[in-house]
Length: 157
Image (cartoon, rainbow, N blue to C red):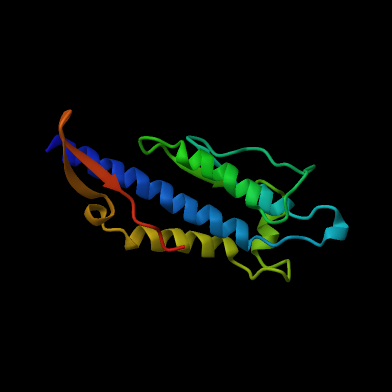
């Protein structure tokens, strides 16, 4: 029974990571990118920083910035993958104008893109059936007794 409890706990931790990954992927893609001639292309996208245990407090105004946000998504993905045992995950963007962008200041993105990303994360969480999400498969191994393996299903992103 202990192994089953541990497998479910592991599934919950994986779900937490999958929710954060869905949120960070969507929020970075939805964040508007300024025109290249401004020299700040991708600044807002690249300031979405995922951290463990405490929220990121800084902001990068100098770059260089990746307009696609792919580098930031990859870096955030590494942080998420390193989150073990369900420690709190945070995503923050501390640019002084991120609120204006979310309010619709830029014609390149609709107002409320932050809320939209959070709704994506909520949808991933609501779609999870913890027992189904953490499918527990018993496997016999000649070297060890029964093991429980936890498999994560793909989130809705």
